Length: 181
Image (cartoon, rainbow, N blue to C red):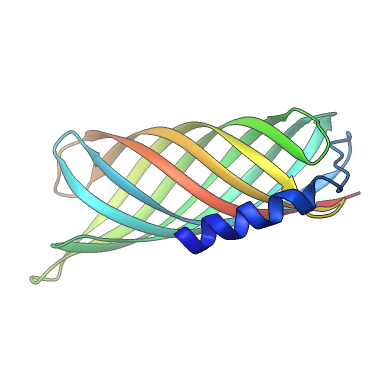
């Protein structure tokens, strides 16, 4: 984690010379990977590693809408799971030189399965989640930016043999985005 932080810190001074642009009609294609820690009502902790490609379109200057896909693997001391997700996302950017903060909101539909260890019993996971967050684009050149993102989410899950429950999630992601004219 320290090496990743130093990497971003070292790239920051070089990014101030890059030019950013969030014009109407542009596309953005990106992806993120990350780690999250989750706990909540009737729920023990788990760790999640995931990959989530995304695409967006600027409907107005600085306002983008898009779609995000996701694949997650979760592990804890007594279970593991694989989860696929899809959902719309909206972002609003502030356009400075090389550092561009943004806010976003997204809704996610989640489907997956979970295996309990050591019995290998499985169940189906269905959930809906809403997230709000903030992020920054550090432009490396006119079309490529790094994205550290922090978000807070609330989900409502329905699992085969568990009662319906709610979860809170704090998420930290790092990714890249490529802007296309």
